[in-house]
Image (cartoon, rainbow, N blue to C red; front, side, top):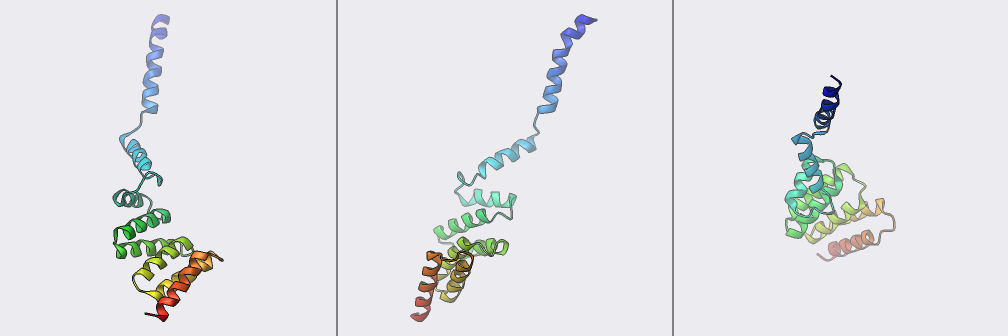
Length: 143
């Protein structure tokens, strides 16, 4: 009997190990998704939007998506994404600046100035915010 126990205990431990540490497909798929959502490695809009679907409150992802839309010329989508980010964190001065720049390019100087002032309120002394306000005021004065 002792021989059987000595012979079978390593096999029993192996089975226990396999049962305990085997990952399910769903867990490993989540790990792969997490790896593709690394902000340093993610650059295309499709991947960013899939990542945002997993983390719907991530202002950084929304900002990155808005930047991608702005660069591609989809200013309406960029504005919507920036506004979505600001709905979560209205005091994010960087997003306010991005929105203000976008609005100024589209010719909405009053809204650009308001975004610049909001950015300046959350980032006192910001030269970028001050410049945006000045450019928006000049644009409004000389339409």
